[in-house]
Amino acid sequence: MDQRSKKLRRTVVDIISVERRGHFGPAISSIEILRVLFDNFLHFRSSQPDWEDRDRFILSKGHGCLSLYAILADKDFFSKDELLTFCSPDSPFGGHPDRGKVPGVEASTGALGHGLPIGVGMALAARLKKQSHRIVVLTGDGEINEGSIWEAALSAAKHKLSNLTVFIDYNKFQSYGATTEVLDLEPLADKWRSFGFAVEEIDGHNVHELEQLTNRLPLDLKKPTAIICHTIKGKGFHFAEEKIEWHHKSKISDQEIKEMYQCLL
Image (tube, rainbow, N blue to C red; front, side, top):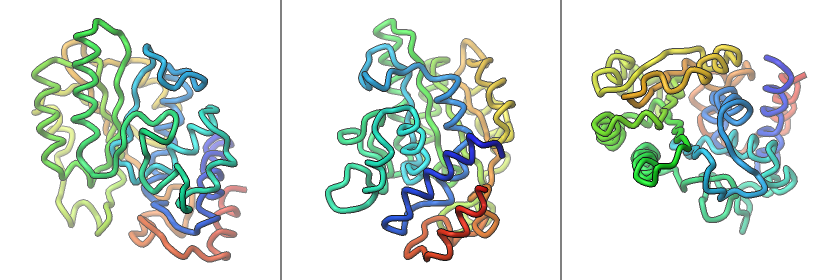
């Protein structure tokens, strides 16, 4: 793990160290995906969050917002100091992102399964307006148990929305256990292909591979794209990796916070 990935993880730890709670595991698994998107792919202006020609990024797995907050602060949408109010009364930074309160957030998400339908609508709107911006949606793997995801996927394929890319954070765990035990998703790549998507699978923590892949988007000019990112829940924190109790953690102790920082040395 390089210093940039450690820096973003350190920001996540800083955020949760105040109120001592949050969806830690699902935020950490998506750090590299968000890093590459905001560093190398998405067009935006942090000084003009509603710039008309910006690319749209939707965090459909809204509970993973700690990583989104970290990268948005890194890109100067707001100050990192503001993030230290996370989950406190009257803070704009809640446990799920709020479009009306947080600059850079394109949709209020967290009721799972709705980010992709919103993204399909945005992609259609861009086409109707003859605009060239791109729409990127990041879903969780447990989230795609939701039927609304697959309804939206069918619509995206029908309309040949090549301006739409879905990244699936496939960390193999959801809130109540392993995805293989709760509702097995395999064969996941074949499912997305059968729904009309161009599909690639990738190591979701390999920054170089992610950069190379985003440089090739869209994968097909007549299809939407799905990128299945194989990740590790809690990546980089040995005591939290693939531990279901770290999906959402409350009452995080001083010792646990200390261990988090030690993992990033």
